[in-house]
Length: 281
Image (cartoon, rainbow, N blue to C red; front, side, top):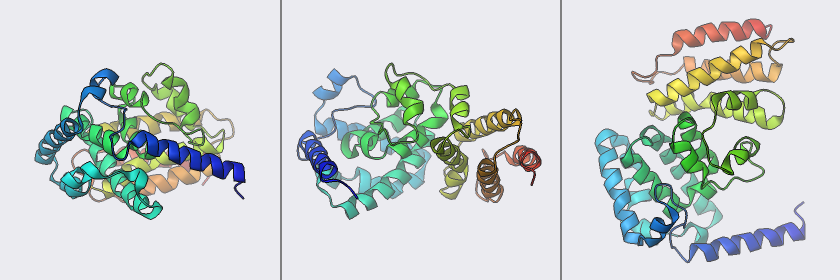
């Protein structure tokens, strides 16, 4: 049961967020602009930047049109999600997270960054959709995009990524692959959650027709490193890890719409055989 003190803290936090939101004003945080420059931009300028980016993305990815009206339409200028009901926010979260995942393949382009800026400034995804944002940026963990998003993320202490990323936030920096793989190792519940999260990235992208080369390269190298790390375990791969890996690989192997960047099947078959052998299955 939630204590009265916790309820009051929750109300105070929500009220503080509403005050910060200034009845629909954009978030003060920015993904692409320094703080001083971001504060000097009026709302129409931010919106026009986003639309110019969206127009360019639509040339590359017509499926982004799914979000054109609901997330980038004129009506969103007056939308304040802090004033929406819990149910309305739940529905909005589902749309935003699909958009964030789809936009992931374009985050290395200026046009993609412009679109993501709108999601930050208008919908506060860096505070309210942190999990989806982290997943979208993981394939860029060794690029300049990662420290930039890390600098503005609101990492909750309950997030399974908190202990991994919070130390890097103090001086925003890239995430070393070896650190991520080490953190995914089965030492606590959160590490298993992160393993499952990474494991599901590729199948989720295939389901949404959003597979791209950076994601495939990230997924393949991280999972290969992880399996190699598990080989060093004297007692083999723990059963919960075997379950996550086998179920995840089966999902990937059953994918039908990966596109030209989905060249991972032979790699998967070799790794699956290794896992089954090490897991004693």
